Length: 203
Image (cartoon, rainbow, N blue to C red; front, side, top):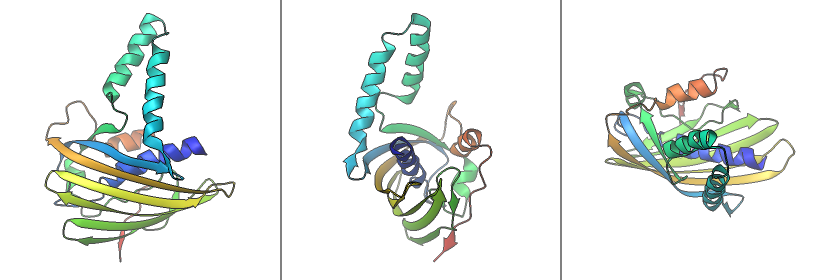
């Protein structure tokens, strides 16, 4: 459950950053930095950094050909595990409905959102693998910078309670995504059998 929760928290951090509608995210390349990541009160950013360092040590002992492939993969991810680059398509940037975080494969109620100027708040509730999760968050747009925060709490299939918190910053880098695929395309390729995203419902 712990590993699954870490992955979920990272996904929520990335998804929250795109919760703004028109006038928020521009089409093109964005860099997102996770500035805070906690699970059950524990700092998960420090664990991600330690895991990356351990992976690099393990790669050093691989055969040359395999080591080269792994080093290339890490190079694409960047040196900082808290930073990643995202491509926003023109369709995503122009969409009227805010995109609210939703764990892959989960059954979620229609999310609620409220937009006031450059600030959007949202709430969601989901069921997955016998557990339940509720969450809330907000995003604020300031020119080419988008800051986001999301908090979740819930129980896993065994009834154990977990809380998660993620804060991110997104910075616009330019209109050219290069070879990077748009987020929606990557999501479809990763979860081809997942259900369509539910439309958001205004408060």
